[in-house]
Amino acid sequence: MEKLRIAIQKSGRLSEKSLALLKEAGISINNGSRKLLSVAQSFPLEVIYLRDDDIPQYVEDGVAHIGIVGENEFAEKACAVDLVERLGFSRCRLSIAIPKSESYGGIEDMDGKRIATSYPVILEKYLGEHGIKADLHVLSGSVEIAPSIGLADAIFDIVSSGSTLISNGLREVETVMHSEAVVIANRNLKELEQGLLTDLLFRIRSVMAASNNKYILLNAPNDRLKEIIDVIPGMKSPTVMPLADEGWSSVHSVLSEKEFWAVIDRLRELGAQGILVIPIEKMII
Ligand code: PRT
Ligand code: ZN
Image 1 (cartoon, rainbow, N blue to C red):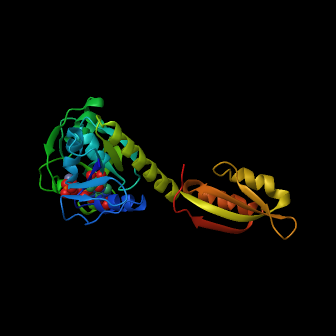
Image 2 (cartoon, rainbow, N blue to C red):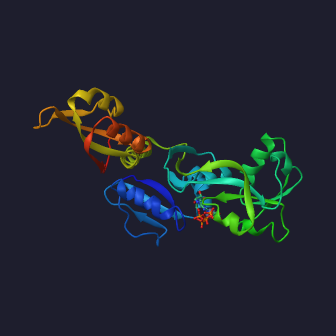
Image 3 (cartoon, rainbow, N blue to C red):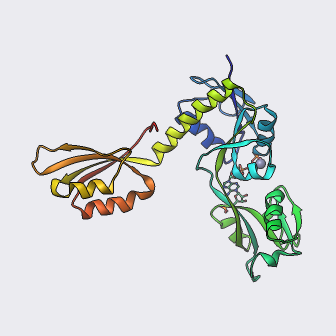
């Protein structure tokens, strides 16, 4: 039977989370990442383990039908593949940083400067858009030490917590792009492969929607019921049931993580009691 082939990072920051996402989508993979290729149970999927740098090209070539990579690799490799889903994990940003003692007046200050980076394509594009010409030094790792050894005036690299910059005496002055893990796909999938991708994305979206939402139950005094319902619209509209205790109703609904605390505070002000918030396992949307 035909299978969808997905490329996943062999070992690194994306590997575990990529496999965990497949697992939550009901697809368990047999042997971790030791083999080059493994076959999933319960879904026609094959996993090929690669370095993240190689994934966009393998997907463009059709060696893998789809892949999970950082958006930064997708942008840097500029391969002819489609970004089909953002996954929300491994978030980071790509920024220009300079020695902390230096002043910074704006991107114009980078004109004629030497910038060390592993992401020349993304940087060149950004500088070009701002009419800046800099001298790029392409390094494959340890970019952050370039200024202190006199190799560059600035760096352009991935920043997450910012502690790598701080411990190398650098400060972030310009954020060029934000990145998260994404699913990329080959542009010439056959009908069957496209169908499998649609099924897989449906599962992935249900997992993500569930982790972004909570199930909420509360008791509402009937005289404030309308106002309480207005605060929590839910997926369609909330379920309302009378309580044995007269004058009170039980309200059930779904709340997004983002609006969570603001809504809870408002509900308490409106007299809601016994508020229970429960994680959702899967959410079919
Ligand atoms: O071996 P392979 O080529 O497959 O792996 P890799 O070493 O190229 O990549 P890996 O595993 O380090 O990262 C994979 C992807 O994770 C990246 O392409 C990003 O999309 C994403 N990601 C998220 C990060 C970070 N956060 C991150 N903090 N990638 C790298 N870093 C490094 C960064 O290079 C810098 O040295 O962490 C340092 C900065 O971190 P802070 O927290 O000190 O700011
Ligand atoms: Zn890499």
